[in-house]
Amino acid sequence: MSTPDGARVQRAIETVWRIESAKIIARVARMVGDVGVAEDLAQDAFVTALERWPGSGVPDNPGAWLMQAAKYRAIDHLRRGRRLEEKHGELARERDARRADAVSDMDASIDDPVGDDLLRLIFTCCHPVLSPEARVALTLRLLGGLTTEEIARAFLVSTPTVAQRIVRAKRTLREAQVPFEVPRGEELDERLSSVLAVVYLIFNEGYTATAGDDWLRADLCEEALRLGRILAGLAPTEPEVHGLVALMEIQASRLHARLDASGEPILLMDQDRGCWDRLLIRRGLAALDRAQRLGGALGPYTLQAAIAACHARAGAAEDTDWERIVALYDALGQVSPSPVVELNRAVAVAMAFGPEAGLELIDGLTGEPALRTYHLLPSVRGDFLFKLGRATEARAEFERAASLTENARERALLLARVAACAGTNGRNAG
Amino acid sequence: MRFMILVKASEASEAGVLPDESMIAEMGAYHEELAKAGVLLDASGLHPTSKGWRVRYAGGERTVIDGPFTESKELVAGYTIIQARSREEAEEWVRRFPNPVGPGAAGEIEVRQLFELDELGQGEAVERFRDLNLPSQA
Image 1 (cartoon, rainbow over the protein chains, first blue to last red):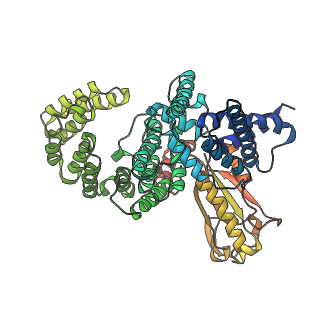
Image 2: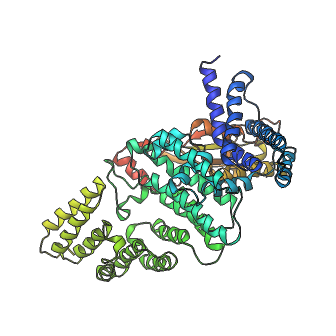
Image 3: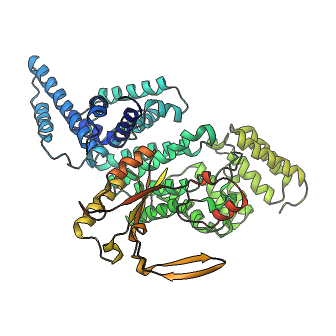
């Protein structure tokens, strides 16, 4: 019976796989010490389920079944490897002992917590030896359970490109002999920030996508949030993990408010706050609270989340606590100095203390090489000038900004401001 | 996609009897699993209807009726909101939901999909409704 019922069972199996695959790959990877081999072995188990379950029915605990089947394959794999080594007379005692451990792991309870293995898997997928694109692809594939096709569609590249990226990433990990472990000591901070950067990269890829055809890309936001929430459960004492989750939850709360009916972006201050998702805001504020209560100096994600929270807490745009936002940008500029942060700080200063004060700051940034072709610099400067009634100068800035942006919608917005300047030319625009 | 798992009331929940320790442990473990998978959005138990009330509308009149209410199968005792990537995924998570009245006993849960904001369509009335800032509006 391969008709509706068969299709239904197949979908059910695929669903179980999506839910369980990361745990299974992580556990097997700890046994065999190689994520590429681990994924192959786990896939084997999945294929066996696809063959068997339509006839026998889905077992009561399908996750445990898959885990068991994958572990058996891992043991076979290890034994084959050992026999091969014995045959070649290269009995590496130490490695052998480790593998014997792995085999005896098999006897341990199936409920043995898999969390540490998952954490190892996340750190391995986001290892700095890999390119950022490879980290993203491997993380979505092994931790998110996404197919190569789905990743390709989400990132607007071809399926073979993603497939090759993943194959190469696994090979790089093997060749670099990256150990399957959670880094310790000083290395931990650096490696953790690589993990957080990968998750945030996935989120932003979805966040900057627009509606319609890009719908699958927007799903990346949910995927990143899911990864972030998982990470928060695995590393609950790391404040920046909660900071990142808070930042993503609050930003995601505005997903439905940031575009108008025709797909045009709506600026934060002009968004209909009634469309902000209160549940996500509440979750974001709770995560921010957790990050802050863990103590220590606030990291960049927590600070960005705190800034996002200022907007989320304001019932109306005019209620925004801009002075606090300025203070938070000051702190952010300290822990992760960048011209873009300074630009944002100038905007906050202008909102808190008037466009004159903002303009002063921004004039100090115009020589910044990193901002030379950044359209937001002239766009913001034009806005300050416009508010100060200097429409002719504002117009030149908006024109420059429009020529710098590659985004058609943004260009349209900026050209509209050029036109508005022409309309108020010479008059005080207030 | 978001789904709400509604736990139906029982005689015990309506009597204000708190679940026993093993039930709390089992529910806790399940929700912990949801949280660890990044699926859990919200969950809460509800006080019995003896602490609630209803407002009945009829012919332009409205009448307040204090609880408790009797048709316990139709009453809700708690809810869990999950985020899933597909209906199948939600089904798989719900399949693992512990029997809320205890192993072997007759109980019921119900699953409903939450509307996403996009599904409500456009219009002035919808806009005004959105302005209410309701929690968990997606």
